[in-house]
Length: 399
Image (tube, rainbow, N blue to C red; front, side, top):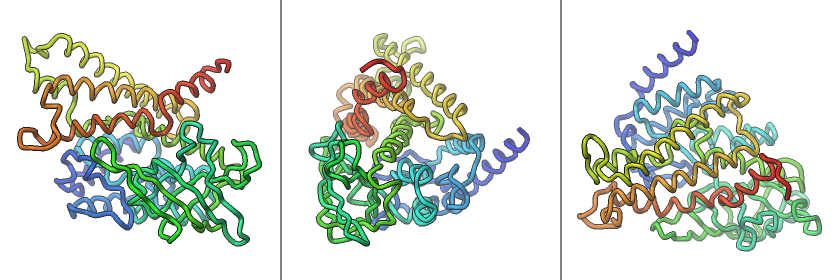
């Protein structure tokens, strides 16, 4: 314990000295840093903060130091999370490199793949996106038809992916492709890494109801994939792909932070918002129906956070659980959606803000966040898919 307290003291002092003031203010979706060659830093402190954290390996605190990670123990990682929250520090960088492909390479990648890709994720040099869903292969992902042909010294990829989040900014894409068309649909699938900076890759953003375009269509027309970028065994990519989804669900639910960061804390806590717009009566939120809804949501969120913390503490060296991630992904996305619905009710007509001086920046952010949150119950596998996994893989119920 003495060593852990010493680590806390050193971490606190370092953060006080090195976290810029502007990186201690709430961030919006537009100001989040994803890294990569196309990243624009409107605030130079964002790049400074990223570089300082990456130098310590704290952009990936528990990844092995030999690949540029922090090499922290699970206990040290949780202390770091506490201290980052204490100073309201922004996450220096986020994205699929950290939440999906990085952990998957640690599970299944070759030593060469780890040394090639992990340091560039940690430093923010390269940005990744996901090539899973197709127009005719969404929830039934194993029906994917993107073709990957063996051309001797390389693979050639042809097909289309959809809902490839952040593809317009990404440098690389990790992709599920069909390498054996005659095999049963869960077989004959391989997991490959493709450089997007080539003529055979075309990206078209899809504008959402929230006004943003985080999702894209991605087209492969004779795109080249080097054979050394095959992850795992040829025609056995379904196993790798499923494990990556568990890492994704862990990230979406907040499980990989031990429940220490809320999904929507950048737009204010629910009680604060309710008090601001509805007012108080005898020290309580004035509207009793709204008060009950707020109380229930906050209690459930706190219980959920404690469960996440316990799961993190019980896991082996903080590793991502397997099928249990569906429990956290399902509940986390549903309770987050409920929170925003309650917040809308609290703000009344001010929750309709889209543009104009009659709405504050936070009110306009809420509207877009609420609309965007609907995707949270679909991304990483819809709530219905998660319930099926829980029934079959966690509870062991019959088909």
